Each structure stands twice: as C-alpha cells, then as structure tokens.
Amino acid sequence: MPKTLQSLPSLAHRAERILQERTAALAARPALLAPAAPKISLLACAVGAELYGLPIAAVAQAVPQGPCARLPGAPPALLGLFGQAGQVFCVLDLGALFGQPGDAASPGHFLLLRHDRAAGAPRFALRADRVIGAVRVAPPDESDEEARPAGSPVTGHARLDDGRLVALLALDRLLLPYLPAPFPTPRGA
Image 1 (cartoon, one colour):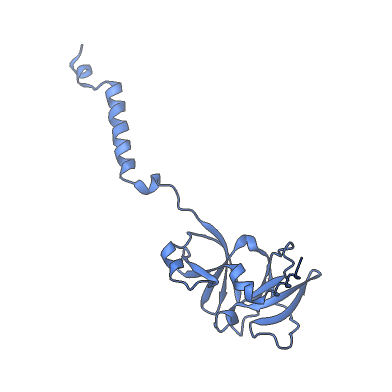
Image 2 (image 1 turned 180 degrees about the horizontal axis):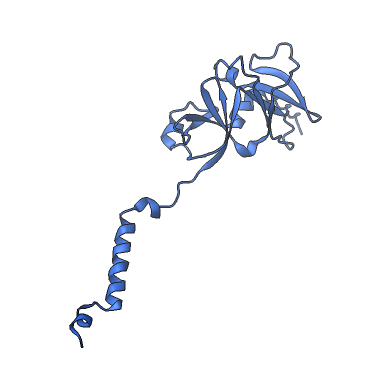
C-alpha cells in the first residue's frame, strides 16, 4: 500500500471524532437544549405610564372609548354604562381603580370582558388610555406574588421584551367589589 493511504484515519474513526466535537459544542450551549420557559398570553394596556396585563382569554373585544351613561352615587372608578352591539357594560376606569391619572388627551379604549352567563353577573368593560396589544410573557416568580397583600387584584409583574414591567391583573379580584351581593338564602330552604 502506498504510504499516503496508511496515514489517513479510517472513516469510522473520523465520523466518531466529528460526533464528539458536535456533542461538545452542543453541551457548551445549554440554553439551546433547555426546555422553553412557559409563557402566558396577555392583552397589555396602558394607563398613563403604567402597564397592565389581562388574561387574553378574558377579553372579548377592544373598542374605542364611547359615551357612558353616568350612574348617580356610583363610585369614582365606575364611569357608567356603555352599550355595544345590544349589550350593556358597566365601565370601570383602570386609572381610577389604581389611583393612576389617565391621559386626558387620549380618547382611550374600552376592553369588553367576556361575560360569565352562569353566575348572572353584569357585563364589565375596563377603560384604558391605550391598548398595547397581545403579548406573551413569562409568569411572575412566586416571590413577587408573596409580596402582594391578600386579595390584591395585582398578582405579580412580568417583563415585556422591551424591558417594561406590566402588572398582571386577576379579574375576579378586580371586579369583586362591583358585583351585586348574593341574595340571602331563605330559612328552611
């Protein structure tokens, strides 16, 4: 045999060496092999400089702000009643709920929430200065939730891709003070 053929490594040895090199390169990049962190889908909206995130499945529609019929004696956060497509919504101002001044120059948006027909609850809409859009974020870590007071409508914070923080809202806690009181059960029933 010629000397040059004897000096070449066998194909099996060469394939083994390439496989080891690729394995070592992949092992050096663990982020590529790690499972993706779970993400939650939110509808992000803004009130002044603050950002809030609602579960996207809870929002039926976002519409431009329209006229509301004020209710005498209503709390300041309850803007009034708004009609859309034959439905009446109780409109709550997110800015007033959280003590944030809204953008007076902004015409704003109403976020029409999905209605729980079984519970017989009224329909609600939330007023925001502007809708940012649908986003996917990592859920907050448990330490963020532990720092919140019990029953707080803010369940934590998440960071958007651009670095801004968004407060995550639990709608059941947010709407609870505005739900009608249940009727007392008659005695002996």
